[in-house]
Structure formats: structure tokens, C-alpha cells
Image (tube, rainbow, N blue to C red; front, side, top):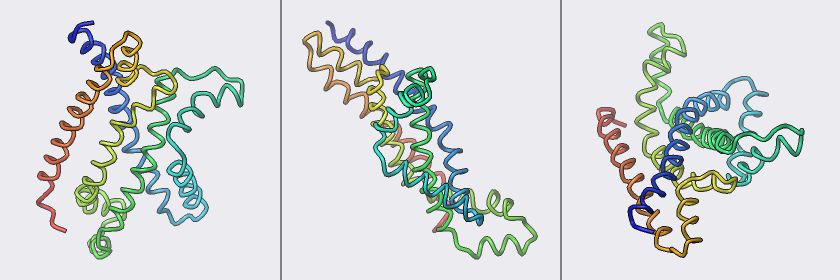
Length: 214
């Protein structure tokens, strides 16, 4: 099997990896903010419910969660299993939304309380203070820890293979059956390139937000 054929096979798996990564971000970032607001609400029952869910999700293995989402509906309720990619996506979105919510919460709590009070003195409502005063500062605060989670997400997409989602590691492992071991190592090049581009984008974002001084 030629180098070009191997590259095309791995690129096919990389497409699925990229889709899972992009769609997870698309849904998990806003969901994480909602979960964060729920964990900080003054309504105690809701706050403790949300924090309990976050604790369970963060405290259990992602692989186990993927298996539960894929096999659970059928084994527990006799429902038709979700498509494999959809099951993986739902799991990743919920898992990373919970992690993102804690990053959001830390960023919000790092904003001086005086800024909230100053906004209210100027006649702004709490939502107006958050979106007009706090949000941009929050983004600057969370870029470094969020960057770590994004790089982890790139690598975690490999766990989707546990329910036979054809991602890049699955593609590399398939070639082992053809007597080739080097394509499995070649997959590392794709991950390094993916994370390298992601790192450059995160560094650019930090520089763009450097006009906010802590």
C-alpha cells in the first residue's frame, strides 16, 4: 500500500475527527455557559442539581459515557440505538459543556465585584452588565484554560472508536491488519498538525484580547 493511499485513508478518518471536534464546540460552548449560569443561580434546588450533574459527568470516564449513551436507550428502554456518530457527538457535547461550565464559572468569579456594582449604579440590569461589561473580560480570562480543553478534545475524539466511529485512529489501526505498522505512527503527524494550527489560533486570540489588563 503506497504512502499516498495511506494518507488518503487517514485523511478520511481525519474528516470525521474534525467534524466531531467542530460540532462539539458549536454546541458545547453555549451549553456550557447555560450550565454555568445554572450552577451559579440563587435558586438553590436548581443550583445543586446542576452541580451534581457536573460532578457526575466530570467524575466518570468519557468512554463509559459514550457506551451508556449508545447502548443505554436500547438496553434500558428497548429503543432503537442512536446512529454511532450522533451518540458520540451527544456524549462529547454534554461532557465538554460540563468542563467548559467550570471554566466559565472561574472566569466570572475572577471579575472584580465592583464592576457589577458600577454597572448597576449606571442603571444597567444584571444581564446588561454581564454582556456589555463582563463578557469580553471573561473571554480573555478563559482563553488559556479553554485552550487546554480544546487540545484535549482533539485527542479525546479517538475514544469515539469504542462504538465503531471511523475516526483517524480507527483508520490507522485498520491498516495494521494489512501488515503495516507505520501508518499508526503516521497518525501522530495529523494530530500534531491539528493541535499546532489550534495553538496558533489560540495564541492569536490571546494577543487580540491583550488590551484587557488584569
